[in-house]
Length: 92
Image (cartoon, rainbow, N blue to C red; front, side):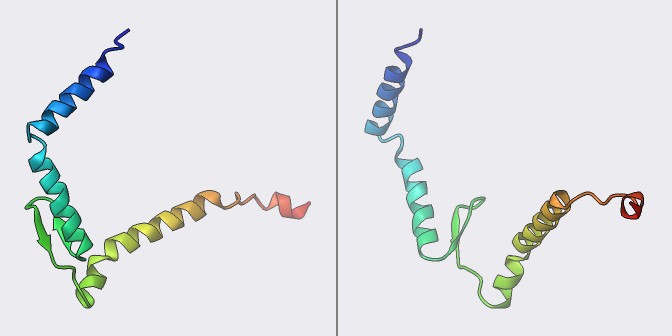
């Protein structure tokens, strides 16, 4: 059932690419790649390449990542630690 759908999709993709309808999308990917390859950051809302922050600005720009990483590590340790038993277990 519906064995012709992959062929239909392939034809539609080929027509789209041959009609240059995909050119703006490919240009966006090329712009993003060139920006990231050059060491910059891509602002997705404005589609602009921004210079990578240096020095103190770079450290402050990465603190959300490190805070999230620390929170995940603490949560993993709390979940993985053995359960603490009551004092009756020590008396035996």
